[in-house]
Image (cartoon, rainbow over all chains, first blue to last red; front, top):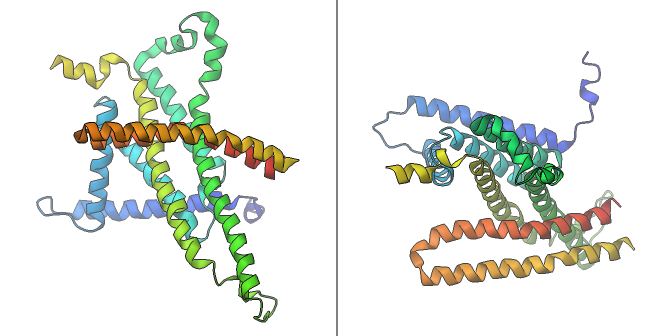
Length: 249
Length: 70
């Protein structure tokens, strides 16, 4: 049964995605144990303080955008955001970043896509099918095509950003290696390793990594969770939305 | 020939860059008129920039696909 287990052709990105999940699981366990032992009258510190700030931030964000109709939605958003951010900056340590494989952005996009349709079906019941024949039944094929637009745009946005940063970094790395081996060409080749290639590379790559890994990761994570919240919040009908609640009170 | 096709495909980023500039210019206009709205406007600006960026990313993907796959 396990004969072919170790010769499975799993892409490296999927394995690093599993590593990211294990890291998040351990972090969540540590925070959970700390939160259970914490005296509620004392100030939290360290990891627990960061976790509480994060929970408050994401809860406020979802309450601002979709109101109180989905009380647990902040947790889903925070989980997605933490996974996505760690996955984006995972390339820093040298292993392949999970987002540079098409499968992982597609999975995240599918989560949002299913969320949109399930939430819509939950709130509108059988009137859910009315969205395919609006405004007139002639529009059915157009609606059937345009329902895939959020999935496509979310997936390609994540994948395109990750792959663009990776491509630029790789091009710059090759150029700087060649430049360095031209300048330091007087150094001898020891045991078939070109030691003269590595002299210019580290500092520019570190500075560029700040933008292409950290800044881009922050922006893309924020955009992804914001778009997910707005897409799903759109499906909640007016009777449940926060605006009508405010008007009544 | 593939390189030329990729170069033509990447031209799609020009209007996207212009659009992003317009978004930022108008947000800065709004911020200078009404500084209390700063944080709300910033959130909306990031969202709008990301939406405008989508077309640029599509053309980038097309050109990368032409270069490395096609």
